Amino acid sequence: MSYTKITIRYAAAFFDLAEEKGIIENAFQDMSLFGNVCESNHDFVRMLQNPVINADKKKKVITHIFGTSVNAMSLSFMNLMIRKRRERYLPSIAEAFADLYQASKGIKTAYVTTAVELGASEKERILGILQRISNKKIDLVEKTNESLIGGFVINMDNFQVDQSISTKIKQLKKDFEKNLFVKGF
Image (cartoon, rainbow, N blue to C red; front, side):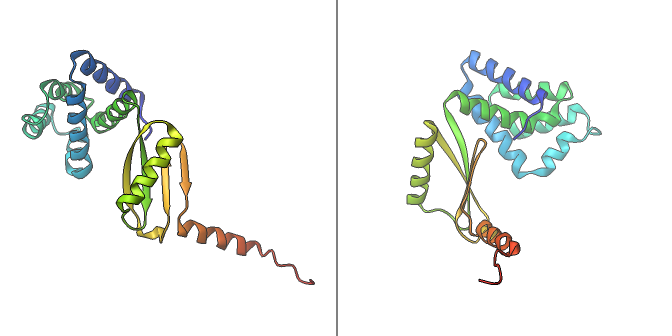
């Protein structure tokens, strides 16, 4: 994902503070939880982005949802973002924080998209290959997309392997449109 300067600066500042206080693991869990809530509940994200709702109500909502399940420093960070009117960046900050955490642990995220769910042996083969290529531990995120028909698409950093049937069919269509057949032979 592309991040704004604000997102990166706040995520880095919170990461450094959590690392300094020795709660980096807790902060990572908290930011992951926040990111999951934002991903699964679009109304929550719209509430954060709504300028009409005042900061006190947003703080109450955040405290009500996360008050007992996150570290006090993470909750204070979220409230600080609301007080500074930066709450619309919180979902991106949570994602950037997770990226910083994974980079500090030597973990890369790879996304594999298939037409059907992968079996355990297929996952292990893909993980093994990606780990050999990158010399890093891989966090594999699986997605299914039936429009691929078959095969797979792997994305990691700026690297993509597309071995899907739908892409091969599109390539065949392009090749047939060129009409390489020459009459007279």
